[in-house]
Length: 430
Ligand code: SF4
Ligand code: SF4
Picture 1 (cartoon, rainbow, N blue to C red):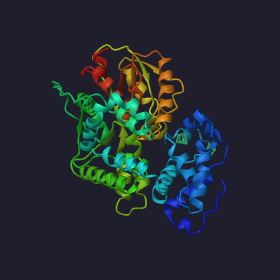
Picture 2: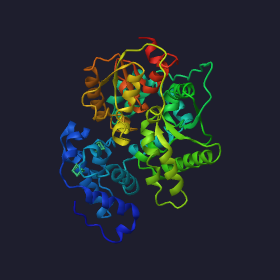
Picture 3: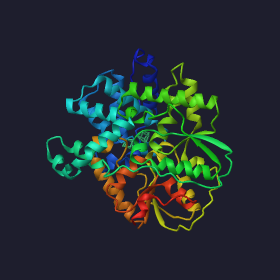
Picture 4: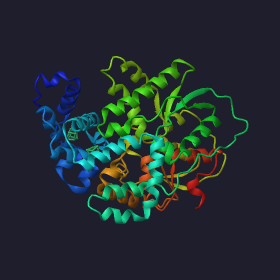
């Protein structure tokens, strides 16, 4: 695509990077067929190609973001499906990340929007505040339908509906005769997942120990910054990311780490991008690149071990491939192979490349599109007639679990169960 950025604008390294990305696009439109928002609405401006045009026009003119650009960029899920279908290698992720940050700096949103985005950016990354918010929202769950009918109440209703009826606690299980560990890995505790389902990381710890790996929670780590990053709140996301980088580098240089293992693939995509995000920061470029190089999704790390099943399984599992895993990290087969290796019958979901509508805070900020995508996903999953739905990202688990009618379980909880851990709670009442 031809561009017309001025030499002055291109002095900004971020502008230079975005201009390079825009120039790579050859307008072919292959990406449109796999873009969820284009598939739903058929509007060119809600396609990757349309958004690239809008972003190019905004950045090259150095103009403040217009209402039209904000509307269509906000509707993008950052699912990255378009990157998988693009024959030219357009790095849409880095372009839209820059656009979101630029919008945040140059566009004044209506007051209710600003308040909501501020609240999401403060509350979700903070487990203590998030836990309190879930507790506060829970009594209003029966009123969510009423709230949705109030003017502008759809987003508030979406938040209320997503608040789980109860917050589970992690179980502590004693495991006898564990082998002496041969590897040592950091497990990202993160933020929202540790509140919504602490059992995911508890199962990860058990599973790793059982297979000769010492999992550690590194003091000082926390939210990876992804939630703020996708809201364009750069200062908060960089602060969170730098705190994690410092914590992990200190652990690497101290007791040592073989990997940084991440069980929420949305977080994994961001941690793997720290190297790019901080490439121009002299104090963090090297450290961030080291952290990104050490980051692995749990399914990648488990693929290096030989899992030892101890019980018969055989249930039919529909594997929902989170966008952040399949498009963001190009991890497609490993989770399925792991589930098969311990005896589950794994089914691919038709139209599996299309997002479930979760996408970080998308299901709160764009509830109408998110609900359409969720229902489409659940209808496709139902075609596989599963007994269990598995996924590797807390956002997808919450989104699909809100309406699936079939237990929705993190992949590691199933692997833990198959190799000697407790039955996942979601299966106990089935
Ligand atoms: S990231 Fe997803 S929603 Fe956004 S343009 Fe690409 S395919 Fe469409
Ligand atoms: S597929 Fe790639 S090159 Fe073609 S229009 Fe989409 S982003 Fe541009």
